[in-house]
Amino acid sequence: MIGIFKHNNPLALLLLALLAFLPVITGDAMVNAALPAGATATFKTLSGYLTFLDGSKGILGEMIYTVLLLAEALILNKIIADHKLMERAGFIPAMSFLLLNALLPFHISPVFLVLNGMMLIVFKLLVTMYKENNANNKLLLTGFIVGCMASMNTAFLILFCWIAICIMIMRPASIRELLLATTGFILPFYFISSGLYLFDKLNSSMVFCPFSINFKLPSLSPWEWTKTGLFLILPWLGMFSFNRQIGKMMIQARKAYLVMLILVLTTLLICIFSIKDISTTLSLMLLPSALLFSPLFLSFKRNFIPNLILLALIILSLLR
Image (cartoon, rainbow, N blue to C red; front, side, top):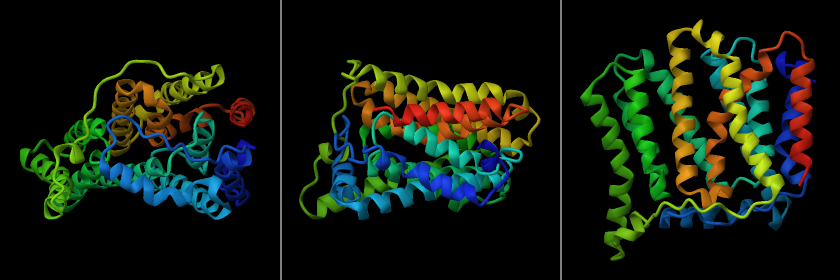
């Protein structure tokens, strides 16, 4: 089966659609409505607008949700193919993205689906600005998108550290460029504050919801903890299996992997600081985890072990 995904077989698209629809098939299509600690008014408002994607409210929401999920998987796949981040990857990155999504012990919230889409855009901008002489617009846009993400949850403010480090990795060290990205990051908070002020609703708690670090473990079943642990381990297995090949890649590709590695660590910190809400925040790691996990399927000369891994993950995803 893994050969279908490796060789761009048209049948792979049908299998990808089935993987995207797997949470609905298993009856796990109901949206996790829990709000993580630190969720701002922006997060709550967006969550309210996206309730139509709740699978429990009809087949139309399920279909739209599945299409969006599949679109994100294919966009990730295209970015990897366009910038040659993997050799002969086929549809493996898209498959890995959808496999990890199915493995998640909790259905990914539509808001976090939007956040993953925003991460995809930022990743694309970071990779493409590497060789540009003048990347001012992209730097401003990168900061703005990450600022929009941070405006949804106080804990997401740490994402500024991610783009600050990544800009220094992808670009020559420049305070001016870092200030441009910082300006873009601040703009969403300025617009939100201005809007609240105009409607006489300006309150600091509306923009920065109080957030406290809580290391209390959530009450999860053994199966849910097993899947969570596996979800956290698989990206590192993929990274270690591909370590030698990364060293032989072009500088741009090596830096792209470093960008995603830093994002994994950043989102992991968010999950640890709000571990009580890991049922919602864990899906923040979906995009970087998929990229780092994908090489595991390409590190074997024969397809037996990759097929075994694929089959095992699908079976685990079906177990509830």
